[in-house]
Amino acid sequence: MSEPQTLLAMAGAPSAPPALAESAVVMIDAQREYLDGRLALPGAEAALAEGSRLLGAARQAGRPVIHVRHKGRAGGLFDPETTAYAIAEAVFPVGDEPVVTKTLPNGFAGTELAELLAGLKVQNLLVAGFMTHMCVSSTVRAATDLGYRTAVIAGACATRDLPDGQGGVIAADQLHRAELAALADRFAVVVERTEEVPA
Image (tube, rainbow, N blue to C red; front, top):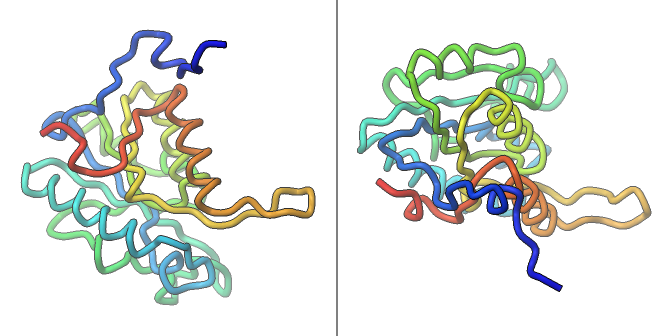
């Protein structure tokens, strides 16, 4: 039996991520809810550290950075009146970096993200943030529908344990790996670290 291939590989698509010099960075939901709130994720601090390296590289290269944050309801997750809503210090916006506020998993749904990217005239995205299986995945899949070429920086993403619906639990690291494999099949090039992105 032959080794499995991704649909991207079968189609002859490039296996390398787009160059930083031709991309915008989209940092998704890197908020304190995932760091020290009710949805604290295993590996969140390490992911934020890698996210900080990604932002540092983009800023040094003069590339655009867009932050996406999730807004919840009062008393719930991502309550805008609490510190859980705040973007984590390690990846906090600087200067005039825009912050897009969303209420659904997909960062394009009901937001100005598409308009911001159109104004930047970029077709390549470097994506990081939380959670791998939820808002990162939803946004990357939507980006494909909109014609963007995307790379996901796996080390700058994280997720959480989930019930499997059969009385068991899918561990966060397994879910993270499986979701990245699903994205790499058709929707994105996946690399582990920022340094793997060509300048």
